Structure formats: structure tokens, C-alpha cells
Length: 169
Image (tube, rainbow, N blue to C red; front, side, top):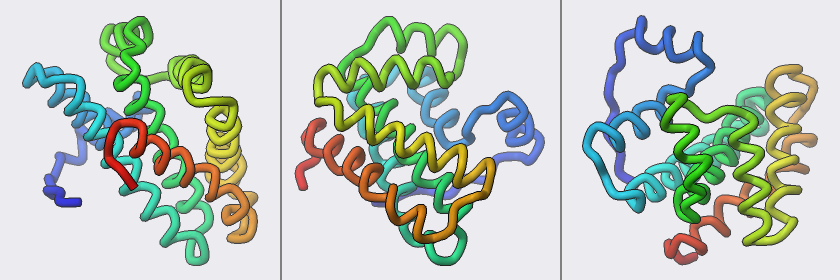
């Protein structure tokens, strides 16, 4: 993956975080809108972020299980955004566009609809990612072994999403 590092002023980052918005996702969404890009570009961008977060999470499991948990959750979140776009869940995407952000409710509704297409495993994998987010990151209750037990579910989401959108193995 080839990426570009961009510095974003601290004040803007603080404002995004205050609103519960992820910086990288916000930049992707804003650029998509500003440049009026095809949805396929958004699918690829969210999937690229998912795979990046997955690798970062995997590399942190033994060193920092709290941060690993959050990176893995973010990987799952980006998979959901990519697949919601790929499957053109237009009502949800319109809601996101109107509000300017993804909410937990919009993510969950997307997960349910994606699960209808891909199977229940997707919902169960999302639930594993959510457990990582809550108990691994926010509550900081998980050690490396706990994170390792849930990592394969998030990894499956990302790898299967890559297959679905045509990225191959």
C-alpha cells in the first residue's frame, strides 16, 4: 500500500475527536465529496484503511493490547464502510452524508444488511470487533491472549471484504 503522510493542524484534529470522528476516515469522506469521486474509489479507500488498521493491530497485540484492540475495531469499522458503499446501502449512505458522520447505529444497520448478503458470520465478526472496542480499548480489560482470540474474526472481515470487492487474495 502506498500512502501519503499529511499533517493536519492539531486544532482540526481536536475538533474531529471532540465530535467522535476519526481523522483518516473524515479526510477520505471529505475528499470523496469535494472531488465528487466515484463510489468505487470510496470502497477502495475504506478497504485500504481497513487493511492498514488490521496490520497495525496485529503488530501491537503483544506490545500494547489496548491500542491493538482499537486498531482492530477500526479495521472492522472501515470494512463495514467499504461494504456499505460497495453494496450501495443508499439510505444509510444518505444518512451519513446528511449528518456528516458514521454513527454506531448506522454502522450496526449496515452490519445487519451486509450479513444478509454475506452470512451471519459477518455480524458475529462485527460483534467480536465491538467487544475489542469496548472491553479491549475503552475498559482496557484485555491482555494479549484475549485480543488474539478475537483477532481472527476481524481479519476474516477484512480478507473477505477484499475478495468481495474484487481485490483477490
